[in-house]
Image (tube, rainbow, N blue to C red; front, side):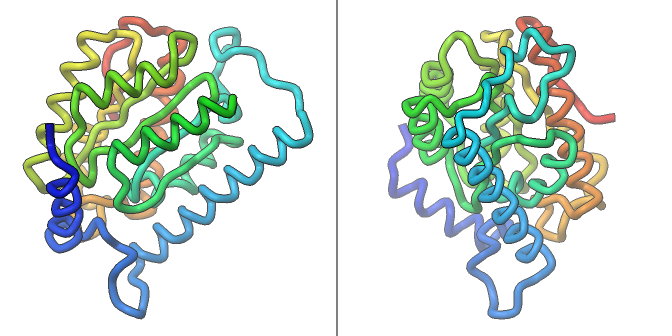
Length: 238
């Protein structure tokens, strides 16, 4: 098992090598920093809307499996700066989606968020998790993720495209896990973007605005594929 000190060191390495620690840079924000910051604001607004909905006791939608299409109001998305950079596009294709995406987040922190949402009854029927940009994802962590969401929710895992060795390990781990758990849908971001890297910022990690539309469409298709799970094949880009 990887120690917490090694995880912390990995964030520093990634901030220097791949630019994923985008919010710790110079006083004048870059285009990527502005995009991620805007995504964080969109993410926070989506959570505030969800809180108001609970407070106002709005009717709960029917389960996702009963819908012809899964609407955004039935989706919880937890991610890192890649998801934050894409938050505007995600909200466009899945209006009402709940997004919690912040830079430098690793899987243990994501699990804490999901744990709190599940405990408070705010975790929605479809859970999208896009983590692995900032360090490896282990089978033990995926087991805990499946335990937390429970047997009555659907899970979408978004894999990674990062110019670091652990990205390959993340993708191998998640691909193997989905093969063993066919009810989970894999959104294959790696395969979607690897021949379209002109859509990424120069860090070769975060999508520029045209790339966020590709990311969002991928997530949308994966969310819809949960209606056909188990046994749904990995969802890839066009």
